[in-house]
Image 1 (tube, rainbow, N blue to C red):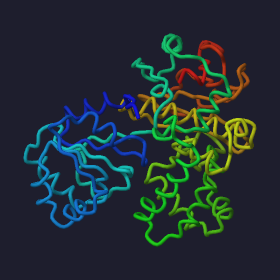
Image 2 (cartoon, rainbow, N blue to C red):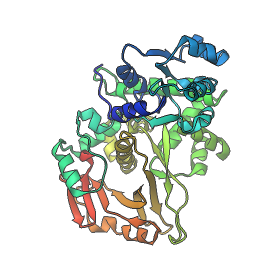
Image 3 (tube, one colour):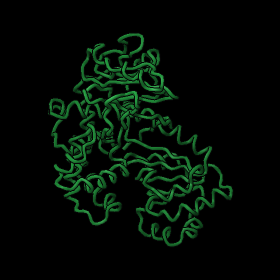
Image 4 (cartoon, rainbow, N blue to C red):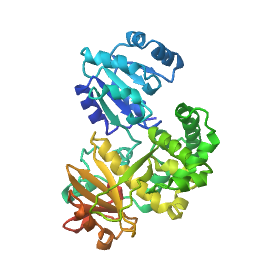
Length: 405
């Protein structure tokens, strides 16, 4: 399969010039190993802890392992040998040169407790599945910012897509192997889910019943882009709420799901406090919820939810791939007023609503004004929708086509 250059490469190489240790985290099969191997060159040794002999050596004799694999080295699935981090820390403290240790892990940073001792010594980048920009082969370096000129320039390099084409992207997903023209999509996701549960989930939750966990994943997928309701999710999956909480935490640790927190402040009255649940890959959502074609998904009960999930993940990929760390929020009150997504950048809030329509109206952004009660200033907003062109509703609100993301 042809290697697709990843947008995160630039941020990764910059971090490698500044830090002795660079860790790339992300869900299984997003392309971490493929990218790092492509960048490594001939002088960097490679080892993976999928190899049980190497994993056993690193766990039993971390010092001996680092004698065998001297920097520069690429260590894959490093989460399986947390004993190694203390010895890598010693190497850094003794003056290891920038780029000495490239690490990859199929878990998020917060789930790898042993890494906490290396705070300030390791650069951590979160890698997502392929963005539409990467899939379509665009190479502009525009950051995600809410200015009309920036989006007009960006749209010039994009090919507009119909709603049906967008739903084909949503249904297919964005994991590299799923996009291989010779890959059967259903076979891929069947193998992916099986491997995820039997290899990755069981490492975090020993002794679980794989079929019960699959039912739980289906229950979670059916509630994507919705406010988290553990009780309802547990009821559908026929388990207690505490178990559902632990299992959802495991999916988050593996980078399968993520949460967007509610924006809260005493001046924002009657505000919903629970986070919203999203999946990192919409193809997985479509597979778990058994939509057999993009056309059926487009008119199905989950169509608005997966469309929102797609837009949110595309925005997140834009930001992650630049090595940036924006805060993501949403806002909703108990009367049903809502702002789908709020970016906090340099102490300013940028509100976004997500609509499937091709003709957005000022009515769609009527709740943006509520955010003026928050302590932070409110910048320009946007409607992300199926508009055929970039435009503006007024001087403060952009219209951004989904295909331009």
